Length: 349
Length: 47
Image (tube, rainbow over all chains, first blue to last red; front, side, top):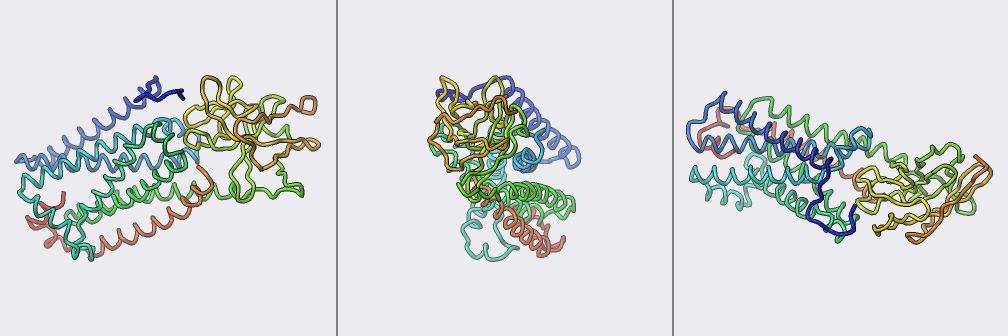
């Protein structure tokens, strides 16, 4: 987190993440080109370009597949959270690799003297009416445009400018772009090359991504049903001693956003479950050095009032709590961000 | 994610999976036989 905008802030974790990422990309493309040239040695500059088209295309598709797996994997198993930390750099790298693929395609068509032919295919409306003649390049162009948009607005400046809600909505178009990319391959290389490994790998990649997203969404559904409020409109959180120390219990009112009720010793505080940064699941974080830490990118908030510690300025909505017997209850109506609402129940735990 | 994002996500993925699966099956089913699919000019056009 920061109080001002800088182009990119580096720390050891980011450097390691990016180092592994770049090494992986270089290794993948290097291995693909080497093995491809060894199996079928290119005999002309155009054939070398063609090999580069394939290498960068397969690499970009693999990267996007992995990127789209990280989110649901992190929801299903906390051990994948470190992959989420710098996922934006992964996305920007995928756009860079996809761009090289696109540039190589244009170069290849140019070397073959077929650039005009490709352009005319793209603007022939009749070609879009049948699968057999569908210009698969168009699907790649749309996907690349979405990747460009995502890479352009990936910086926290745009996240803050657009608001996390709009930013996240825009990023959901990446799911559509991935679907188009699968069809780009299915209507492109899969038509010309009947090697069964292509549909098998393509199908396996898409099925894995789709299954993970559907499974993660299904698991979240139960938590969204929410608890029915009592006659006074308060929600039952549960016995105070059952909320683990330095952790939270997440509850939801029917139709409302989730609320994270944290415990720090004998102090209890309720905050919105949405981190101010990227709407990460704050209630899945823990209290470290007196501050609630978001599990996604480490944004910090005070239990007492939902404010980020100085000099940071983020503030979250808080909720009123009360104790009935040994049971903690929360008023599901949010208080203005930064309102002190934590309670102490010393002697009752 | 907000509740509305989760709701969209829950609807979007099954719909996307179905649409891609149908299109993928169509692409497999309607692809030209190997001899016709790989003449010199066609192969060149599909990197």
